[in-house]
Amino acid sequence: MKLPLWRLVLGVSVLVAMVAILLTLMPVYFENYQLGQFVRQLARNPDAPNAEDDKLRAAVVARARELDLPVRPGDIQIARSEGKLQLETKYAVQMDFPLYQVDLHFHANGASR
Image 1: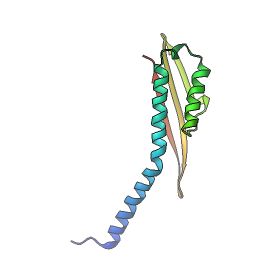
Image 2: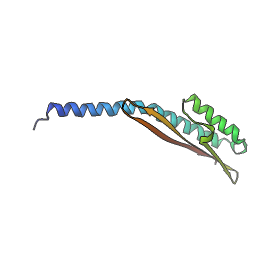
Image 3: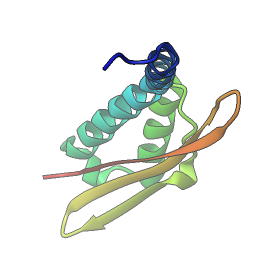
Image 4: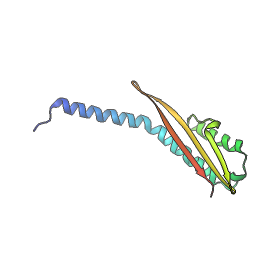
C-alpha cells in the first residue's frame, strides 16, 4: 500500500517543527545545566557553609546573569543544618513562539558534603 503524498508531507512537516522547537529550547536547558553545576560547586566549597547568605546569593545571581538567566535573589533559598549548606534555586524562563508562549520552570540545587 502506497503512502499518499499529503501524509508524507504532513509527517515531515511535523518532524521539522519538532526539531525546530527542540533547537530553540536547547540553549536554555544547557544554560540551566551550567547554572546547576555552578550551584553544586558553590555549595560544596569548604568555605560556603560559613559564607554570608547575601554573598552566596550574589554569586548565584552573577553566574545566572552571565548565562542570561532571569534569576533574582528572592529565587534562591539557603538553608543550614548541622554545619551543612543547602542551596536551592527556582526560576522560570519565558519562551515566545510565533503562536504560543510558554514558561519553562527550572530548579537547580546543591548541598555541602
